Length: 52
Image 1 (cartoon, rainbow, N blue to C red):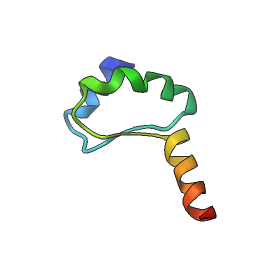
Image 2: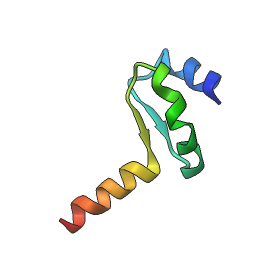
Image 3: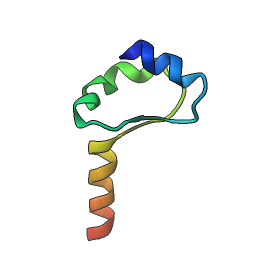
Image 4: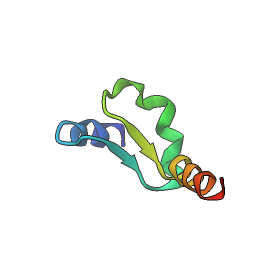
């Protein structure tokens, strides 16, 4: 999975880990220079914003 992300990063502005299970990779993604979004984190942030 990390190799696939590295390959995709070359042609991407942002990395999106759309499946909740992929969020487990987040600690290993510091090697990438592009922003990384994860569905659990961004989903919870959106819910918090809507409830605020």
